[in-house]
Image (cartoon, rainbow, N blue to C red; front, top):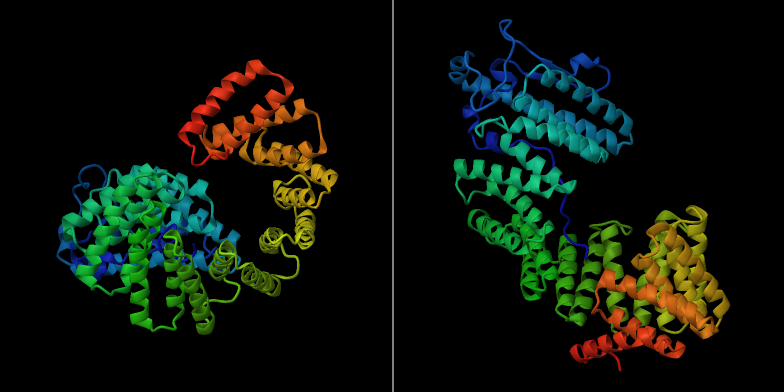
Length: 558
């Protein structure tokens, strides 16, 4: 369900230590005397993009290994905290300016220029690394560049930069400035590219640093804790993720208050996880609390209240309280529309409408469901144009609804529009075409136009075999439809049996030997084996079916 949105990676920011007034304990950037200079436009030659300013003609050195390089003028820096703070602030400001500029370029459509700037800065810092300078400054710049490439969407380069970062931060001591923020960014990016074990390690180190400095109940821990919980969830360790979410909520309640808006993100994450784990009562409690927080902070008619209602509706639906869920969706949509919190064509609003239509359909209120789906289609056509590819999903939903109401003629009309839209915009062998095509095969079958139905089904099988492989689940779905059609057409029994055996193998591998679909197909196979007199194959499968019927007698049709 669409609700409160969580980002795959965090906004670039290094505010934490400075805000707490501990900047007088930080080492200055530029290796205790020098600082980097970052430029944001392509007007500068590459050698100027990252420039080290040397003091007293002394080449700056970088801390790596267990201890910093000795022999530097550290005492002068420590006795002048204001100088350290100013240099650090300047370094952070340059990093944030670079990242902000890259984001702005991408937003304005200047992606190539953004890539040029990122690449030029990378070449400059690469030169420093090749010269043996591997300290927190290089790590901070690589971190910024990696975040920039995340915006670009080039995950391959992000992975390369993260590999370089791992090598550097391994040699950086925990008390270095900016390290905790870099680790948080790394954890978020590792998660985004699916390297969850690497993400877990950097989050763990970040938490160790923060807990040592601020204790185990400080709000500074929230971001890495949430990141760690996300990793646990992604790797199937839901129980550990739930424990972390409860810890985050407890910290925020203690430090920010029981009605702090900061509670929304962990409450939503916990509620969403609880739904996936079947803990619907706890999920409902989380989303109810979010709704109460928004109502108190912004009033009953704020758009955020409407979004929170959709989350609560999701929990109600999971509990089986369908009518309550429908009412929440309707009220939430009304609040959002009245407050103009979101544009009419916003994806979140569209998802809410589709979810509402699905629930209305499930409760037999098919006309209401179609009215909501028609609204989705009209809004899409208004903002994106007639027969835009985004209309296909709404047309398919409407066709499904009409088919359920036995209005097959209207369903056919809508499905042919879908097919026309997709055929004009994708290759003739694109698997996307198979979705409305398979629906059309079913409709033709229901209209007793079996020859047309068979042609559609055969084409779907061909396209899906080409796209997914002959033993894939989508092919099994299409074969199942084809078998039903060919059975009524009286096609060769041996050929139909061969197709049923293929379907059974696919279903057993993909959804399990004891799934209801597999057992239904098994019964069909037995029917044709018996019809063809293949008794050697028949007996073993009969025994298997009897055993499974005894085990699942309440779910297997007689």
